[in-house]
Image 1: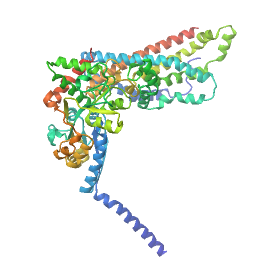
Image 2 (image 1 turned 180 degrees about the horizontal axis):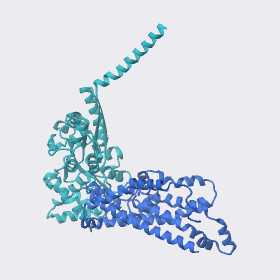
Image 3 (image 1 turned 60 degrees about the horizontal axis):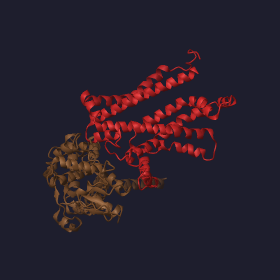
Image 4 (image 1 turned 90 degrees about the horizontal axis):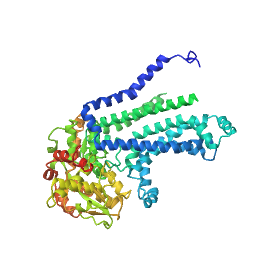
Length: 276
Length: 340
């Protein structure tokens, strides 16, 4: 593990150069343009725009629903990944391929399909309606759409880590008298935890910006079911370009802060594991 | 040897003739392509109209013209054109959106609205109610929309031209009630919008929500959209209700000067828009339930367009600029009714 042995292949300068150029073209320049545009407003107007009740409500909804969807996917994505890696059964390959569908499907198609299903006259909606559960055109519908979009992120992040997991540790724990649950909680889960966190973080960040699938199922009522990206679109349609970018910048900053926090959490988790 | 050479020459000559035959008519008759950027419920109308115009143009000039159409929320369509969508003509839901091409994009000159007859609105429409068959909730007029337990479907007026007409028609009715004040009108609008379970971004989206998803008791819709829904989308499932007063919607059209001058299509774009005003064009509009301006065509389709007392934006609101500033800008009446 010595540092000197680390670099066998040359080309650090060249690849770093490409990295910086590519990131600048694809990420940094568009983002700086966004930031620049929002400065047209001046600080006072900027704050007034992003703290308007309608904007605050939409930010709360976007981040809240995304968090909820990410947590849901954390639980159920974990189970899906576990089943796919640990068990051999007919149709496994098919289910494995199904997981990727949300990646491939145009999000608008997903949104329309989900709306048709969950609308009060749809297959699922008509079953839920008598129970008093409304999904389409409510915030719950938003969570459903986001859960659909986020699932592959969790599953695909967990799968390789699960596959690499050393099963002998489990046998050892079992041999030493640990129950099944204790083995899972104390031996298996701590190793998977960073990957699960990464998966949830990816799903979450994807969901915060999601527009296409949500817009059809949300209902889009101000203060209730209007997501932040829709407020941005509405501002654009009213030619309030600077105000739209102000909301976009706020979303970016919020997401960035959350990502940093999640990275820190992960680092902390890994260190703790290392100490053990 | 010789025969071979003449053979080759014959083939060459034949090829040249074929090529020439292919080239000559093409050189004589030009091929044009126009892009008409329009709003949501005009799809079917312009499909018919474009076919008729292309045939007319071919008959009079011999030139081929292919017209592409683009549809969406009126405000969004205007923004696409401002952001560079090369529309030769725009046929939008309201003059305000067309005017944005001037104020935001400098694509058309001031006074564009006087270039064609009738304020550049070749056909008109109005806002009506589409209800479920038999009108189970007994919705007769604007007052019924604010009743508890009635679900109203209308798009978001910030993004949809049709929704702006809906909103202003309702507002106008409210101001005409005994002892009405702006505050009472706003209170009525707040009640109405509390009955709106879904705000779609465009008129077509709202129709889909009402017709396909089965949401809502009443759809506030363009007259043509309501009739289309009644007759084509869900025959026998809906009724059209005419309110006691409505608004005269004047969807405006213009050619986009910056684009036609660059593409060299000004002449044909002008002819295209003028064709909307001639009896043939007017008749196609009437067939698609747009109210024609032409008196003879209007008389012919009289049965189809029952008389409704209608006000114009200029009469009731002092024009689009004022209406927009009072109701649809941030902090306007539409924002206020959602700030309980």
